[in-house]
Image (cartoon, rainbow, N blue to C red; front, side, top):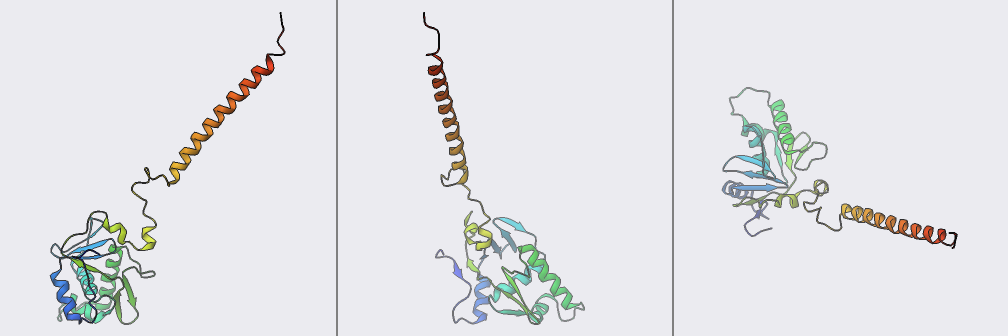
Length: 200
C-alpha cells in the first residue's frame, strides 16, 4: 500500500467520519475497479464502465459502509424523494442487479456485493481511497485470487520457465537427434557396403 492510499475502514472511527473521508477522496479503489468521484465514473483496468445515476449512487452508498449492512430502506431514501410513487422493492432489486452486472459480480458468489436476506446489502471488499489514480498495470495485482489466476503474464514470450520455451527446445532437440541418427545410419551403410565391393 503506497503512503497516499488509505484504507476506508478506520478502526474505531464512527461512520460519519468515514463518510466525510469518502467525500474528500477523489479515487476509491477495490480490486481492478476504480471510482473517480470528481468525474463520477467507474473504470476497470482503465476501461470505463457505464453506470447510470441511481446505479452509481447505490455503489457510493455501499462504499460508505464497507462490511456493514446498507438496508433497503436506506437505499430507497437515497435514490427516491419521499413524494415519489414507485415500486421501491422492485426498483432497488433492479438497480442492485444492474450494479452487479456492471461490476462483473454475482449474487451466488459475490466478490463485492453480498445480499443480506430481508435486510439489504453489504459491500464485502475493503476499498482504498487515494488522491492519485492507480498506476497502469497496478490493478492486475489487486484482483482476487480466482480472477488473477486467469491473467496471462505479459512477458510470457521472454519467460524461460514458460511452456512455449520448453516446447521449442524439445523440437530443436528432436531435429538434431534425427540429423545425427541419419548421419550415423548413412555412415554405417557406407562402411557396410564397402567391404563387399569388388576388388581389382
